[in-house]
Length: 337
Image 1: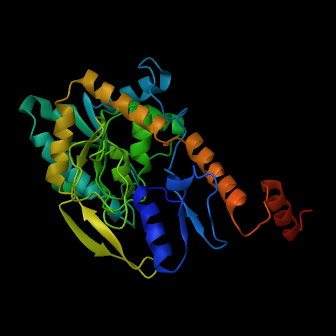
Image 2 (image 1 turned 45 degrees about the horizontal axis):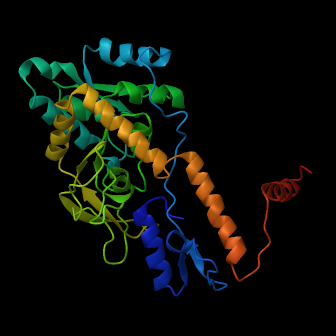
Image 3 (image 1 turned 30 degrees about the vertical axis):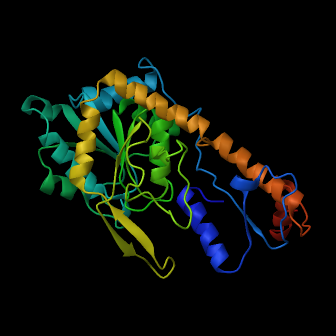
């Protein structure tokens, strides 16, 4: 199961290259009598869903909303917040987010430049990333950058998304991009770099007005094959360059870097959008999540459906385990029962 359309396509390509038979569940699940060989691998796209009953729009009178509205907007005397919620590591591009925000601020009229703030919910100093406080002070000292580093509950985090005016996620490579989904379910519009799973959440449509699929000939939309027809909840930013990164564990992965100036343009695009239109776009994003499998409930239901399909049609008969059997064996091994 691939959590992004790109990873699902990679799974199929790698399996086929290594001689495995592949049955695409998404294309053939309605077959009346599908023919599966005993060693066929069933693949499917299962988006990384989240709890839509936690991440959701809340009223401005809500107690948590009021708390974060006062902490983030009133106390800092701002009326527009760009929110970034990610780990402080290189591929998440936190430094570029600061540069982009500073560039965006300078695009505003003088009397508006101190009315915007960047809220970064992260550990500002991380050995796997950088010293974001130093980055801010050295490269964007006149911009309001607020660091939120305390661990909060999902309900608190949802309130932060609700208070934010836009959420930005420009990771250079990304399996899915949870903060973008959290934002959309919360009803807040987004800025996404077009890479990995982030591009799924842009809702790009093909020439048949269908949600794009990837295959061996078209494996990613980072070059903008489908550029204009996307969800109203997002301003996508297309990578300006691509490099090859890797490690012994992951020999290679493509790194898609977006220019911070273009990210700034996207921030400005949401800033000039009237608040009521931004809210409408955010609600459209939530509706997209609810109807395209981007909830935890839908994710679980699809996984169960795929597993049931495999046990029903797989030629090699396998015992069907239930969770309590697995627990019993584990406990015996541990000497508990």
